[in-house]
Length: 161
Image 1 (cartoon, rainbow, N blue to C red):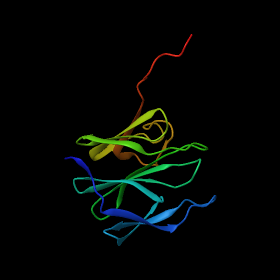
Image 2: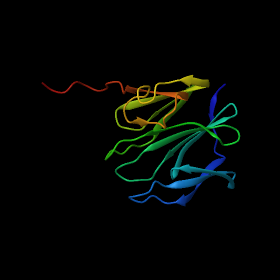
Image 3: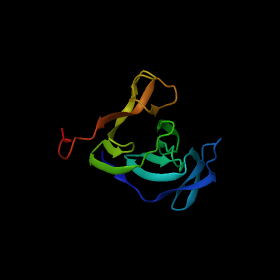
């Protein structure tokens, strides 16, 4: 089963971001409301994996951007979710790579490559200990996707001595 991009999805802002409130939006398909309300403001990627939908959304908050990842079933029920973010840190979603059937790679925070592996069924995970730093999830004993990080390979010449 391959992960494939789908441009038929979009977001409609319901509540804009404020200093006290996370933005909320409604998922749209072909500009038709689905009734599914999500946290986030900007749809960075909508990816289809079998009958599941993986959404990557940012909050559109300068200087403290977060990336929200949500996995939905065919009825738009949330199967798993995660937030990548840290106080006073901003990220840019880039370098999306879908070269493997069940894996999504991307960059968000400088110097790290994130690898998201979709799992065919719910898998046991220890809350608070199964994810790398700056990845936050709701308290659950299972996961439908795993997130790992790796530093970008060193490039260029070594600094002068």
